Length: 116
Image (cartoon, rainbow, N blue to C red; front, side, top):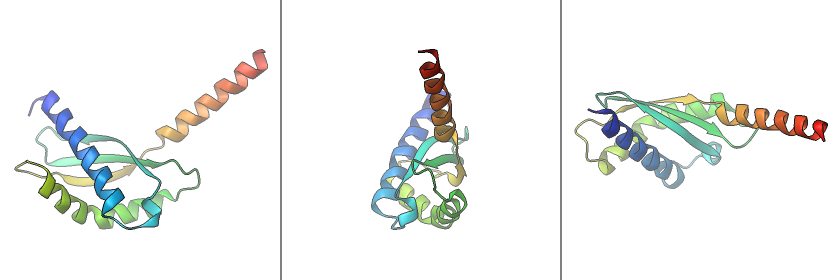
């Protein structure tokens, strides 16, 4: 599969998983979940899904356990919505990039205030 096609499929999977988590997985721990990006294997057999929460006190370990338990359900729902021969195996990974970005912005704001 070429790089452009892989990226298109990854974007479609990201959108569908977001919908599945919002509409079909009923767990309050997942209410603040954000899918930051997806890395799809070139052959489409494996997808690493990077997730985070916009809640600062979110329990990443608990959220990842819930996602691991629900991964089969999510994959089954994906299979019905994707026109692919192979539905990728899903692996969820916590991503602190939003939190890290907020810390950088906070530091920059403090520096800006100190300069004025």
